[in-house]
Figure 1 (tube, rainbow over the protein chains, first blue to last red):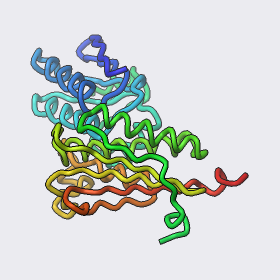
Figure 2: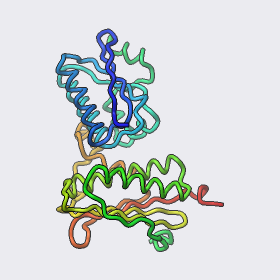
Figure 3: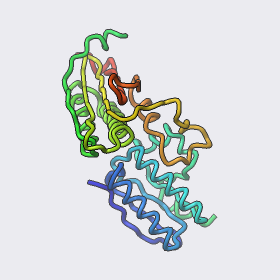
Figure 4: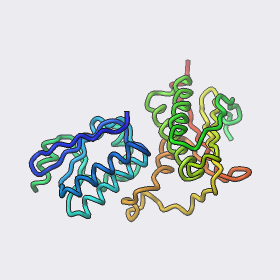
Length: 115
Length: 150
């Protein structure tokens, strides 16, 4: 299964429920296109729910970083929700835990935009 | 060189097209061998991940998807170790020319994390010019002692 991005709006926050594999090729481009589309529509508060992501390679990690930069440059925030153990490990190895704001709980992620 | 590396027996020797399908295939073959050897699920995942990243480097950065250039995949095993050799026919590669992806000023770079992840997931990685041109990446991973004991 390649990547599937399901969008839902919760107040001022756009939630991306990501599923499948974000790898070089279709998966990475699906993620990239989703972020660009949302930013193009003026959505600036974005949470990416990674609970159902089964695999992400270095290209996919790069797309997440690129998405973070795109959203930040547009004056918004991109945050991550429900990382699997393996994705946690990947972010530790690449030191990206210092870049992304990460949440285990959706309500906490949503509330963080109101601070 | 350890005893492990001296006693390696070839189990896979294939030429692959420079495509993303070959990346999947390289990962699948390494995972299949690792499972048969008794690597844990996590170590199998880590080896497969490292092989995938090395295969992407060969297909994308080495051969640049060229239909005229193959990727050579060789897997050899010993009783308690696996070695995966991935060779491309690209213009060569200089590790020292890469930006450190873990340096604070590079954390927001989109690319450049593959080798860091490979090194984290195998016991040894060498990347060197291949004889006759291109680049050879050699990944080596030992079976943890407990899993290898019968």
